[in-house]
Length: 123
Image (cartoon, rainbow, N blue to C red):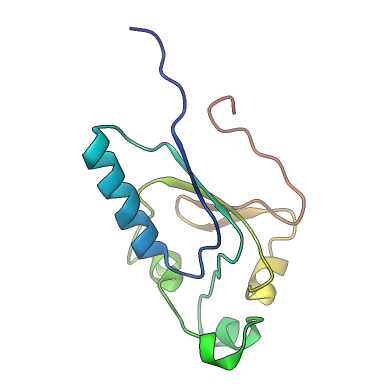
């Protein structure tokens, strides 16, 4: 057989729901008997590490919740697929500002930065 292409999943706004997104990818992998190689998240990732980040997040008070990113940041959980994301209008900007040019926010989770390009598997 020939070389297979890169399998990419694309998610719109994440809103901090990483555990649900990764569970959906796992189900898709099982149902189709393949592995997603890369997850692209297109905004509102909400990389909230702690209460300080939560208080800096640009959302109405009723939407301020820790969600699950902090579990990946602390190492309690590890992203099961390489995840690359861009920021949106509902972010903890204090955290992402620290990585203006992009960088790893947790193992296997990469912030593209405010203007960035990465090459994953030739894509």
